[in-house]
Image 1 (spheres, rainbow, N blue to C red):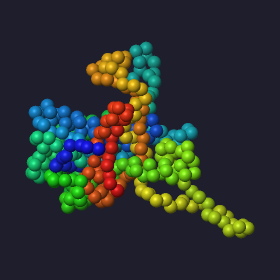
Image 2 (tube, rainbow, N blue to C red):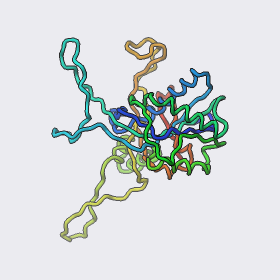
Image 3 (cartoon, rainbow, N blue to C red):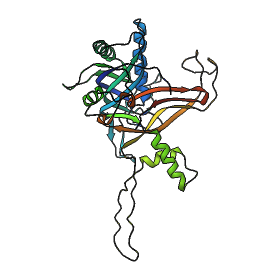
Image 4 (cartoon, helix red, strand yellow):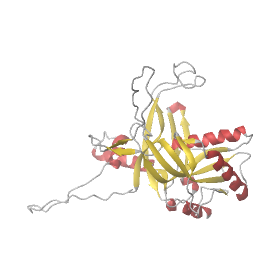
Length: 321
């Protein structure tokens, strides 16, 4: 996938987000989708445009330090449920319906890739830009949650880096990654999902990506092979598998389920000046990876990837290992 080359990365460390949306798709919950953080970067970009700057943020690296799902223990069939708000009564004085809205408190650090005519060209300019963006970020929203300044460790700084090629193993990267510890970076493991599909189809030719994704999130246990005729108690064990790690299902965007309708032709559309189509969530496999295992900034960055002809509107991460 081609994208504009960038030479600057700015770090916004330990942003505290209160009441972010914890339901990223109909099938996943716990952490916002990458598109929520790319939307935040786009909002920052529009602010720069209003200031007369040619400065664009095409990619975002996501590192999570802390999550606090707003949940409560229950005595019903579900062991836990989201803590919901009680909405005001309607115009007739009746109790309004409760719509389940999962919320989570987060502490995240974001790496924004910057390019454009007004992008920083040295470390000093990058540091100044990082300070300005941090000030602008406070009071904004990410995934519907309010952004506040978190408690930044003494060894972490609001700063930026300039390099000729962040796709290489730059000596600055290990120093940057150490600042992001303790924490976990969200990266894509889509190739591992495709590999698992091929393995499952050996035994079940009708298996698809959904079967492979469920296979990753299930807990697998297997009995040992008992000697023939030996009467012993069977102890189940968890088999070892290749490609292990903190693997999780993630929502990566949307896939079209209808043709593209002309602007203004669909009633109730949010924006009647752009074409419209119905979509459903796309799921893939992700991994929470320790930043000390990240070899280059390019491995960390998520970007938008729109393919209207194919009906795909995705976020992608091109990690190489």
